[in-house]
Length: 102
Image (cartoon, rainbow, N blue to C red; front, side, top):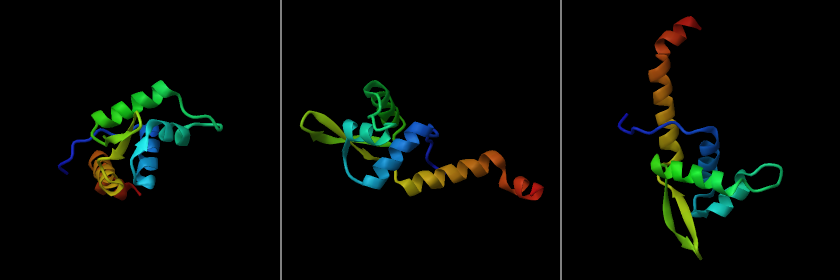
C-alpha cells in the first residue's frame, strides 16, 4: 500500500464520515453542528484543532470560502481510507495467524 496515512481518531473519523456523506464543501460551523452532542454544536477550538489535524494528515483540504468561512472537502475517498484500514489491520494482525486460532 503506497499511502502513508495516520489512523483517524474517533472524532476525526466522525468528521470524515459526515464530509463523505455530504460530498460537498462544508464550513466549520456545519461540521460543528453535525458532530455536536445533546443538540449543541461542538466546541469551536476543538473542532478547529481536529480540522487542522485532518488537513495535516492529508484527509481534507480547504475548498474556497462561504463569506468569510473556509470550506473543507475530502482529499481522500471513503473507499481509499477503508482499503488502507483493512490493509493496516491485516499487516498488524497477520490474518493468516488469526484465522488459524479461530
